[in-house]
Image (tube, rainbow, N blue to C red; front, side, top):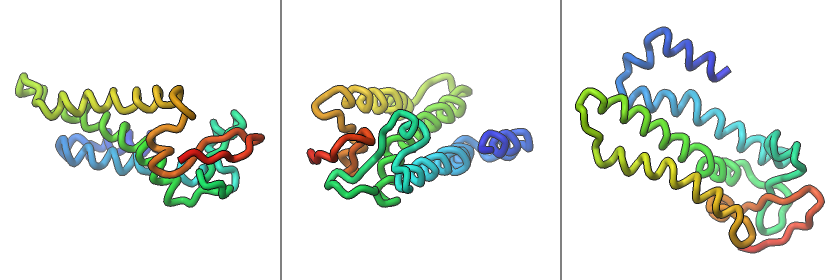
Length: 155
């Protein structure tokens, strides 16, 4: 559904007419935010998991031991996990498109590109260190557990 909306906006020449920064903002609002909110809804709902986590027998719970995570904390978790790296990726793509005519890449764009790659890499590495809690789980005070595991807190 999001692809249809995005394609319609693109082919109607709405997105190209907006310019680099406004186009980036529209794509963030049309693509990134709905997905982030949907993921948070799944994790804060009665299943306590996205479709993929549910299929793997995993769920997201409060690190303090309460069964269900609030929507706000699930939204924070998914904003840091999904929206920030995805948004950075959009900034890089739109920034490159905007700087193509100048022939040089601004320093801020190099930094944003590095961050767009480093941040997800940090998330993956932290899965294999210590107790496997990622920065977005620590920030949102959540933990991913198996459906059969007792909840063991480690803040």
